[in-house]
Length: 274
Image (tube, rainbow, N blue to C red; front, side, top):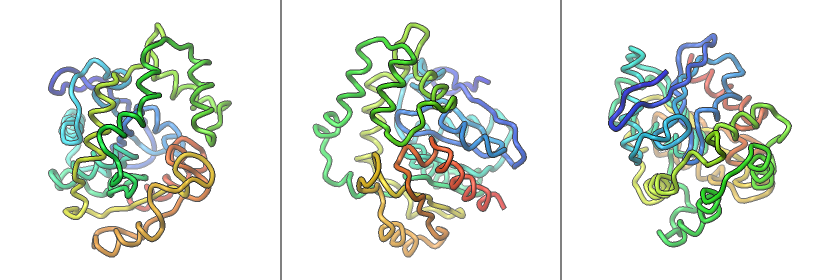
């Protein structure tokens, strides 16, 4: 379905399942297909392509608050007063902003490897951030077949299963019919800049919140985005935060884009839906 937002129409996929509806918000370079692994566990998901991505690629603009306002439009279009919201990576920051500014529309919050300050961000500058995204920006200068793009992504993401049909569907959704990536470089950098240099309002959360985080960041044995100790510190400071859940033997992307990671996220989401 298409939902009117400022500047165009947002593409939204609705997965029918056995649960109350969950608004699922993907990360900075992802798309609505990120949630296919969680949907396979029979959750009812509302999964938008955020502006500038996938089938919403023609909608201009960026920024955490802009995306949160778009999510409010999605809920309005579906006549949903309040839902559980699940966000991964940048989507978790969007979910926090939505829950802080519109707490009456969010009954519970599930944050997956995002939403809280990442210690690694403290050392970044705008120059080093742009350098970190240089490979992604370069990829936008050429055309790809799905097989070529999948091969490159499998090399960059060693924990994904390149034979998984959901992986192929996920990365195929990144491409236009003529093989260009459906995420402008300017949008990617603008949203990443807002995540890294913006201020998460997590301390202002008033809705029940769950946090699941990965053991690794980009492959086996890499330092995580959040340590167990850091997650415990967030819980000590935020009364509405339940006991954080460590997802073992997955990295940042694998929290949702692997069957093992999605199973744990599903367990956390089921708890939040009770």
